[in-house]
Amino acid sequence: MIKPFEKKVWLSSPTMHGEELEYVKKAYETNWMSTVGENINEVERQIAEKVGCKYAVALSAGTAALHLCTKLAGEKLYGMPKTSEGTLQGHKVFCTDMTFDATVNPIAYENGEAVFIDTEYDTWNMDPRALEKAFEIYPEVRLVVVAHLYGTPAKMDEIRKICKAHNTLIIEDAAESLGATLKGQQTGTFGDYNAISFNGNKIITGSSGGMFLTDNKADAEKVRKWSTQSRENAPWYQHEEIGYNYRMSNVIAGVVRGQIPHLEEHIAQKKAIYERYKAGFKGLPVTMNPYSPDSEPNFWLSCLIIHPEAMCKQVRGDSEVAYIKEPGKSCPTEILETLASYNAEGRPIWKPMHLQPIYRINAFVTKDGNGRANSNAYIAGEKLTDVGADIFQRGLCLPSDNKMMAEEQDAVIEIIRKCFE
Image (cartoon, rainbow, N blue to C red; front, top):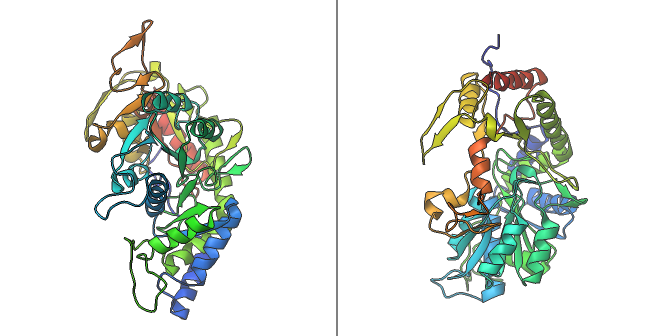
């Protein structure tokens, strides 16, 4: 009989090693507690070297990096805005649909309008076929925001080819995928503007923090300036454009600096968790989150999706959910509630942005065309698909903490197997 875990099994908590404290202590002892210092300089140099880009700018959050990516793109495409307007004023932007809202919100910050591109089953990322269809519907769009879900690279070769054909810039949200590669190339280097995150649950963490990555020196300098309130090079505080308090603290940078040497170690641990789940679920009507054979994810979160015929009835509202237990079947809600009863943390898949109350009025495009207009339409008797909504309905994120012991994971596997009895 499985007993509840005495110590909680987390989804993905920080894994600390000791070096972090030494660098934080150094910031304290040298009194560099602000947004300048040796730790910041070093993490920028080390991440740029590890990822394979020329410049990295340390910022307060991955969201800050995405915002400044968006501001840069809008300025390049549409010029400097009036003070009361954003750089995307009135313009549409194509964006990954199944993601955290930090991917999307910077478009709203700059007064743009997100158009959501449906997901594909191969990688759970933006579907290149839906992107191509979106350009047929909205040929005027000149900016695409792509996220790599749960550390799995999107099909960037196909997406870049489509964007190049339509003369379109790319913002790459690699917040979840630091260390992941596609054909040997690190994520965070595929876009015209790129962002990563060091949030508390990421593959390496600073408790917070993020970075803007680029090969363009002028863009790096502009982001650095914007992130320090757009202070001009003058002997007093001179400001000629809007700025932000987005620079990373030297203290936070100390934590990140201590984490960087352990990136590959963390990835290996996460991959072992993924493979153990995959082996442990053999015979169950579930499949692990997939990835392309030419990519190597960082396996940040292990996820599963239940086969359609094995789903019990489940209904979700905006904040409530109900299901009916059926023999031999289960659903994400039952599995998550059962895990929680044993003191283990799971999570639903990211709810697609086009289903979020704040963005329900925005356009949504599937590989078949306009998703909202065709949500109940059929072609040759086959219902048009909304892949992101389907994955959200049938999928869940599993406990993926790299400090989880093998016997704890075996217990999690057994708990999930019992849900299908």
